[in-house]
Length: 477
Ligand SMILES: [Fe+2]
Ligand SMILES: [Fe+2]
Image 1 (tube, rainbow, N blue to C red):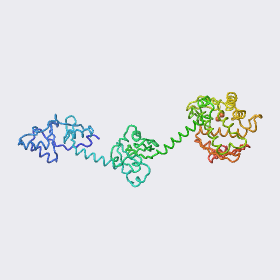
Image 2 (image 1 turned 180 degrees about the horizontal axis):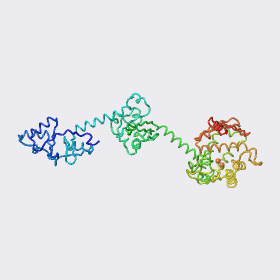
Image 3 (image 1 turned 90 degrees about the vertical axis):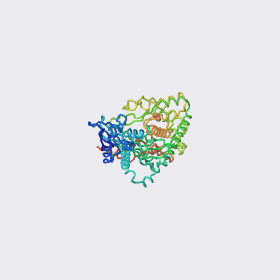
Image 4 (image 1 turned 180 degrees about the vertical axis):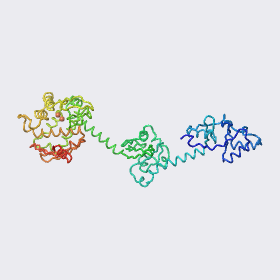
């Protein structure tokens, strides 16, 4: 706010040669406590106050003229119309002066006193309160909210702070309301970012003063095209966060435990240096766009495969006749050891048939490594060698007794790929040799419920309604 917005412009002007009586009459008439002394061109020469008039009367100097008793302009503080009110107020208070002339050049155009300043501040506060009135009209609603709610204006003054906000933050509304908040005005405050950008910020995690983890939503309040403040709602997610961290730790420990089951560090190193890629497939041209590089994807794939195998073991599937748990686990550990992935970057669009080697190639290589470097048993090597063959493409020499295991292996391999590359959620049901798998993916086109008889190889796939409809549409001419 500038001085010109609140200055008083009704001036009492007197000439320097005017008598004290004349000056007093003018001041009484204008109900003013002072008069500005100007020359014939209107230039400021000084200021005469009621106090100086009274003093002259007491000194019996009634015959004096204004020039004799005025405070000369050289000893006066003046401001210009574009001086900030804060600055002018500082002069008024620190210099203990009651009237502050406002000049352009040396011509008086107005004056400022504390009364004018206080009146303007009160009006602004009233206006500011009115602006936020809509947010204060439902106190009972705000009180019953379990979410914290705060309204902060554009000067970081807190206008609303409901009981839940007090509970979550540990701060008291009575100490917050109507005051500029250091928390909200901090350079890294999310409220400041919303005020400065005018854009809402959702799901921003912040640490509260009392050490709680708080999830905030921050929306700008726009009035007449201007950002008047920010409405912030927040919830305490400390417990959820702690649980999440504990889960991460447990998963980390589980991964480490699985790593211990690997036979040597070379295998671990090879798997950890084999990347896997997340991608978006474009059915129109058959190209894929790389969306994420999982640097240790090969390792995660094996760890996830072993986890799936452990789940199935728990469901009793490994005790099925024809399933050798140890052979299956060994095969899972080594099945992709011979895989060689191309180096791709996020954003790259490629033809998968050109950049990725045909899967049966790495299966054959992995089998050779398992057989010759790790002396794995024949069943393990065979499972690895054919883990990417379709059943109808298996050679005649393929031992038929391994078919249930190969079928199970391929399911575990596929589910692990879903877990590793598509953040899939999976569930199983086991009934004798029949295995039902439910898979939900971040990408719904992979969602499926599949039922497979491990002995006969008969497979049924149930897609969700949306996918079935999409399939029907695709078949239409
Ligand atoms: Fe493979
Ligand atoms: Fe694999």
